[in-house]
Image (cartoon, rainbow, N blue to C red; front, side, top):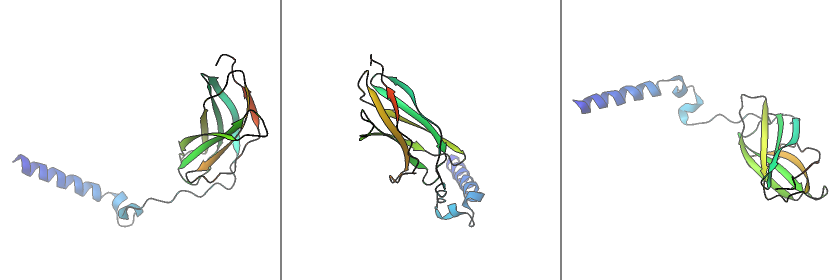
Length: 149
């Protein structure tokens, strides 16, 4: 009896699941396809920042906001930095997943291994999952770490 009841429940659940609109023949999901990402924004602009969010314990967090860059959902927030404004050869980056429903994206990057009482210069950018830049590079900014890091 229990085995027949379980078979009936599984069959009913499967019929409900696969008769839903998401699995209809007209839906791209019917064949296991995922819709393509939206096209890349015509022009990505930083709308707030970049700025130092915090600096403590040998690390800093840099934050900025831009219009949603579009393209792949998987993105990288990127900070190029160094102690010389003409040599920003160090890089830190953080993974981010874009929300297609939001007009703006907040990026944050953790910059590790900083020396206490040191002035750092930086610029920010964002990139798609494959590393292609969104061409939103900021002007060079600076911050000084606390002397007691």
